Length: 340
Image 1 (tube, helix red, strand yellow):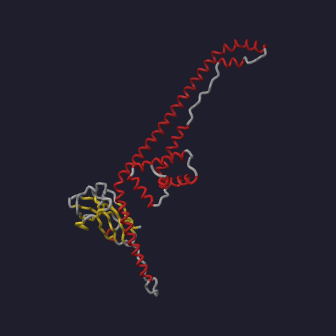
Image 2 (cartoon, helix red, strand yellow):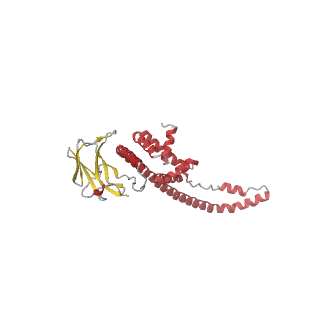
Image 3 (cartoon, one colour):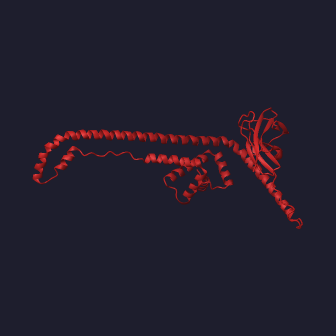
């Protein structure tokens, strides 16, 4: 069971209000804790139900509606919830009570003057003659009401089936998303390693830039525009083995954005966990670029190979890095560079 502060943090996550660092920490937790993940899903469903019923107010309502612009799946859940609300709230037809023959006759004799009573008694004979006609019309009316009610019930049943089908499809999509999240948990650690590498590289480049600016400030001021601080010329990329069997140019390449002045690209290649090889060779489009590389093992147990290539030689066409282990097994890493 989560605390009040954790509950509020989960709501801020659903409202898209967490910083990148806070969001990554929360996602790492629900990847590791199934109970925490399902409690997050229950909280989202509760917010949707309250929103549909008008139960969200003030800042909570504003934050929820702002988050809908970034979550098409949540908008679809709201549409399904509203359809179900309409179905539940739809009123059933109420049969109109028909006065009995006794009640109609009694209303005609509701007089206290004797003269009127004798006159109405004389008219009773004529009313008795018309009674058969009234019974017949009453029978026809009841048959028509029954037919209309049966048609309405059929219409309601069809709408009910349609709404239940939409709910079933929504549940199937939700289950599919859960399966996707479970399948991607294995890759989350690798992405974390990539982020760690990028942060280290960024800090290194920032220190280098600061040193260059300091050096510039110590130079003579006769030509202040002669030296400009350089921009980073090294790009980093993290590649996973291709999940698609490739033949020729088939498969899907990862697009790596780089700046126009990028000189080289440093690749981090994750070795498949099932590989038992100890050393590897790396080939670019069939040509060897590195041999006898030993992977680095991360804290999470992933093995990473490092290789750097010239961005000018790569261009912006599609390429394939092939990693061959000393056990003879190969894994492909398709990619292409894209200048921003």
